Image (cartoon, rainbow, N blue to C red):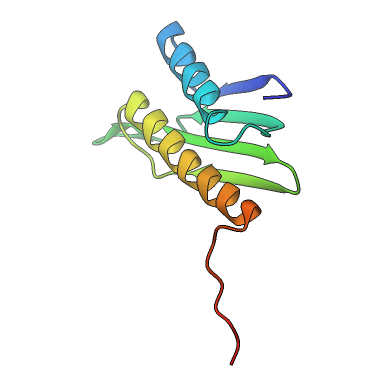
Length: 111
């Protein structure tokens, strides 16, 4: 990554383990696409439900040449599962972007 990783926690305090997990997963994204210019991760617990408990949202904004990829997954009660799901979705979006940029996506010929 060319720019440093930005981690923001809103209405929740991140443990060192959660922070380290985010940093490791963000560093691993470089193996799928090495031209990532920036990565911003937002972890929030927006609502306090009486019966469900705390739900965590994780949003990832990846800046790549010519585009910005945004990942926002469904809320989850477990912070680590929410982080894992968001980074899995980011990996898939990044791989799709890399395939399109390299021209590896099939195109239909007009008849």
